[in-house]
Image: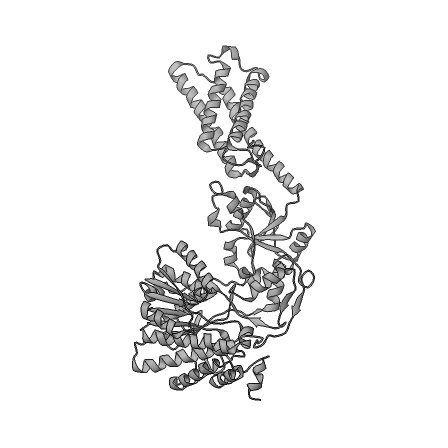
Length: 636
């Protein structure tokens, strides 16, 4: 029954088949030695030939057990399986000859025919080897006849060879390797592991088109050696699907792991192409700041806040306060964290940063040492429609958190800001700039009286990959629905950073700051959103404009073509981390700022958006609206 429902022979079946072949090899050896060569006289042997057969099979069975020759799947036999069979046969022959010599030395006669043994050992190996090669060849031929997709392997080093081995060894694998694509330093025109090596050029793509090869597999280790955004673009431009595998460390021992789990092959994601080389930070400085401290993260259930919470845990804080207004996401996050970090202490808090009394209650009861303030409204078009809400969340919320941090002796307050705060053209960016101004001027006011006051530190960065509401998940949904993909403008560009990278830099910036600084991050090269949309369509297996159209919808209210990290009156200075720079910004008088901010908050409660925006423009003179109804408030 098991044989009928399985696509491979069980171990006992392989063992029985091997013993059958060994039996054939033994009797064939007897026939060759006696009947064909007329060299042996079986009637003159002291031990019956049947008894000799049982002795040989017994020793052979023992050797099979020692070397586990039956543990592999015949259709996925490898070089290792061949070596096991060879060692098992050589060991059988050696042990039988030792038995013969030992008995002959002590009694003057040997129980086994040496001639039969000399013929049997190579004959048995040839039959066992032929079985594995034959089954493997037949199965590969059958798979080719079933139309399995062919695939090229990018890279000829260890990782590339491991992928070739995995594709041949893992069961139920839908891809069949047909060649390697040479590394930059390698030449083409030779064979490697039985597969042809090709140079990466137009000639190769013509060959792939002719032979209908539409997939390329690249290892995660190779991804780290190259610049994915540049080096893999040539495949995307030729509509080649790029695939990747799990890390090599997960499947380097193919004989002792779950083949189905290791054999997973995934299509590469656009996030993989946009990711930059892994960054390094001074972990000792971060540990010194966080270890055995009470850390509060506002907006803890959001994209940035939740990743901050995860990255904080290895530094062994005394407790982590997870503050958010979103009940369900916070609940889900707590369940995840308790499972992932069972030894850490988490304190979930449902609270609204706009509620001053609630914020004070939290600070007075829990006395956080470090605060990461990530709670904010961030969607530009929505905030353009609701400026009062933007002020309440981004300005009043920040003010409440900052004031309570001062009142209850918080050591460090790290505020998460945005590149949209530079020369803002929208409500969201302007509200974040006002929050920056408030915490900076507050620190300077406090520092004049007490150098050991709360250190307020601001961090600015651009878009993060995969965050809630970001463009990539939005494009992915549109592609899944068959299009069209909507882009606001053909020339719009944005900076992108991964969420872990952004949070990692936020944590180090929090250790570098002495108070009052605005840290900006190296965001790398900007990405053209139109190119991003086209690449995502190609990665999904479609042709842009042909299979899935791209529609330009026009800039949204408050949106600009490109984001800036510094305005013209600001300069930057390097820090100990080359990925982090400190911005030298204009200074503001706290008393004047506080009066304006209080008036702005009061006005935002009256639901008069134009009055609110007018006050925002007075507080941030560089705020010039773009594609917005509030342009009429700007000087002509």
